[in-house]
Image (cartoon, rainbow, N blue to C red):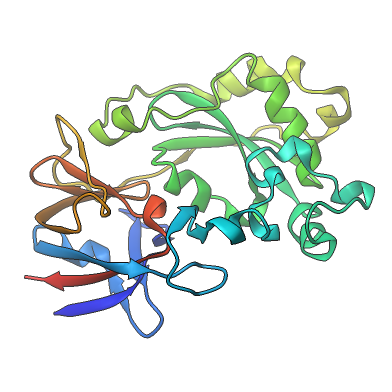
Amino acid sequence: MQYQGVLTKMQTEVGEPIQYFLVFDSDFIHVNQLLDKKIDIEFVGYQCLSCGKNKKIFRQGYCYDDFYSSAKVGDWVMRPELSTAHLDIEDRDLEYEKKAQLQPHIVYLANSSNVKVGVTRKSQVPTRWIDQGAHEAIEIVEVPNRYLAGITEVALKERVSDKTNWRNMLKNDVVDQDLIEHKNALREFLPEEVQEYFIENNKETELNFPVLQYPEKLKSLNLEKTPHFSGVLKGIKGQYLIFEDNTVFNVRNSEGYVVKLSIL
């Protein structure tokens, strides 16, 4: 079977294990069904997720021009504390920014390689945790806008990491943690204006990923350097495909790449 399309991050469904889908314009692939099968990936070209043109991808699926002009990739996306829509101040497109920023957000703890703090829209729970390869996670606060979530993350990352060690995550080199204990210990360090949004008495969410074999020594696949790759799929975790020869492919980091996929 052969497919061709523009890569975007894999869509997911909660299950035992997590279910993964690659979605193209006119077709989709249920990636779990490809486990233990040989896959051929061929790099064809680019298609910017904003303008749709065959222009070299700069970051996050966008060409250089659109990365610095699109409202979807403003600085507030990666740094929520820079959000200004609650002040009626525009960054690139106030209408879009109000829709994105002025909605419930969650500040959470997730354990994928270590305990980390993060921010996501409430509507993206647990998708955000799945994308990070977290096997357990818990909400700390639910706030009404992205700015409050951002200043909370800034305050808490003085006490806990805000980074994931992707290598340890893929090797499954993780230790179970009592996230409820971690959450309660951080409560006193919440900003004053966020204290009222602390979530009491919630439980950890546990996630199980479809991995038959974890890699030992990682080899990261870059389609620009290696435009043709074949390998037996052994697992899916976070937004990575894991192959039998220890090659790992970050689908999300390859958004905007046009590929031809063959199931051999």
